[in-house]
Amino acid sequence: MAKYPQLNYSMNAVRRAGHRLADKLYVVDDHGYQPAQEVFRIANSWRDSHFLPMRSVYLSVRFRMLRSGIAGDMAARPKRMASIRRKLRETSTKLDQMQDIAGCRAIMDDIAGVRELTSRIRENFPHSLRQEWPYIDDPKADGYRSHHLVFDFCPRKKDQESYAGRRVELQIRTRLQHSWATAVEAVGLFNGEDLKHHKGSEEWLRLFQLVSAEFAHVEGCRLGPGVPDRRERIAEIKDLNERLGAVGVLQNIRTATHYAESFVYERGKYFLIIYNADHTVEVENYDDSIQVSARSAAIEREIAVGKTDAKVVVVEVDKVENLVRTYPNYFGDVSLFVRNLRRITKGEDAQEYSLSPQQVVRPRPEERPDPSALIRRYRRWDF
Image (tube, rainbow, N blue to C red; front, side, top):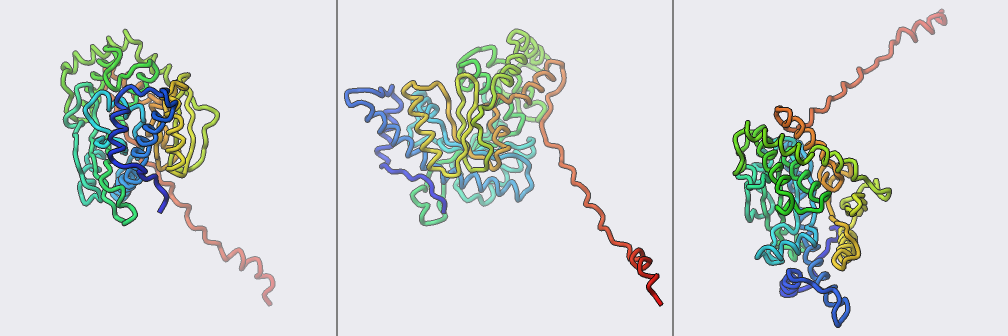
């Protein structure tokens, strides 16, 4: 079995570290850096111990997609330490109780794929379903739509027993829903606002809420609360787009964000994405979960002490080509959202994205040699 990080501390130590992370953590005190570093070591060890459960859920979902012929992409990622700390500060959730420290994401071509995969996962899934949030059938007030399921990891082998009970969150959504979430996070990153958590421009938040309702309309899903009827909704979207210059801002995001020269075009399980303040993106490739978790922890310590303004995230995808497809927010790829926003402002329906079936090239007909040519060639030798 491949080596995966294990928890090197007691659960009491994890709980104490969680309490420390929720407060303002003074990196330098009378004892130097050691106390803060120990807190991060414990928290990182707890987070890293979710790699094996996360990968198991990832592979189990991917297997069901392939077996059922459901088109879509899969990705997985551990929660960023900055996001863990924000959640500890702003909610009553404890570090050892978090449901989404390990997360998997399935992005389906259309709403039918979401329904089919959700149904397949409920049939003999190897891990125990702990909780479920149907944010597609019951969308959030801000317009967020995705189907969430949380699983308790169930070990199948003796050497996996130490990971038992680790929680892994699975999000299943359409490409249209994913383009909305991507745009929210990309605009937030670009403008320096936490739009994802409802902090920032009220006009941008309202625009995203209304566009989400338009996306729900074309997918035949329930609209979120607080949106007007369609005619009034489209008029308001047009007005907000003009006032914000939304299409132009989104185009600027596409232009400003670009790959750094250090991008590694290699195959591997894990990719570490560094999103810099100047909108450049660096990507590092790893085969080993222990190595990538150590590298991520080192950068997060620099973030914590103010040495860098970058954001760092570790993701797992089945193919390097799918890295941008599954995490386009880190690469400024808001193309699908922009295209649909333009359509809406013209009074047209948003287009539910689906890949057109790949044309199968007809095999060349078998070429059978004409023996008559050979016969004619040697006929003159007959006596």
